[in-house]
Length: 517
Image 1 (cartoon, one colour):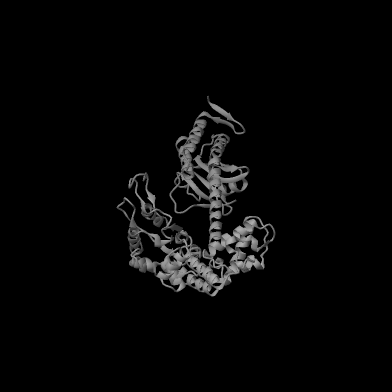
Image 2 (cartoon, rainbow, N blue to C red):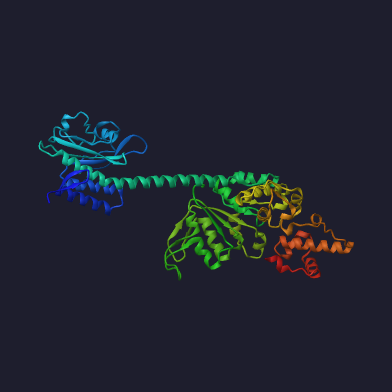
């Protein structure tokens, strides 16, 4: 077989067909675009006997070409760049048509910017360049330089080089699709980060009471420093929200924010969760795993409910705070990390230290900058702001057009003592939104726990001793509820001794265990 005819391309000689097959096979074996272009030129240099050649790609930034791969050309610093319609390569890119120059010394548009030909040192050369195009869109330019031969079949050489360019189209098209996808992902990532930063701005913490204004000032003071922060307050006051605001308003906002709920991790797993483990460290450790501190390197780690840590874990955590280093479970390598620590707890740490359940040296290491989050009952003026915020939030989420909260419902919200704080209020409003069938949240949409004697018209008609006893029992129950069933704390809250509160609990047959849950 001396030649083959390809549709729309004319005849291609058998040796050229073998070269094309070799190029296609090489391209199918490589997923790297740069490697694909270089291998193509090497095959042309070895099998087609070109003197030199290059592939220039169109820049996405503007109408210009930059060198992507070359062979047989002198080394140079930086990339050669051709503007469209500049020189032979620029004209090919501009017009989308091939160019054949039998003798480059006679062609004024041959700029020789790549140094492929020196008139004093090399014989005459022929230039053949073709566009690498897809759907009438030029992706790049392929050109080769051949020894000048008066009898060379330039039409055949042009057909052959056009087929080589066609083989490269798919590779370059995949590259452009990957770049477009990467750019899309990058754009989406930037948008998501902007949304995340917007959602965690300090201004998005709801409240304008004096206590909250003091909180904003402290967060603003500490956000831009790498200082360890200890957040203290009852459950549901928004400690995690404040931790996020500190992180996303700090210089570490682009780095990871890792959350760890110390109370939710079993004691026998918390060390491996914190510091990771090596393969084979224990049964089931089939591969190395990074811990939360290693994942948070360069960013912030939020240790929630730190008062529930075991004494052994407290020792290891103290070392990370002091030395910023640790070893994985089962490993010997010391890992250095740059992590900002924000810890939070609702527990009475002073009481824990008095009982020996919390190390004093760890407390003093954490207690660099402490922020106390006020309970909702101490900032009653923010209840209506929060209720309106949650009403709009869950109205949009559940597709309901709820406009306001009725006055009786507001009165009920304001009278309630909110032992669950903002979290309880949020759950209460979400429930009201779900059961509301019109545009107004009424008192009967609120949970039964908020119903009072005044709002329900069930004021008791008791004697004074009975009313006093009922009120006393209710006060003790509320104190136990706020203190999670701890009698000593409830007694201090009520201003009585632990002996007296025990007597009252027995008298009124109050189930203390119920409030410990």
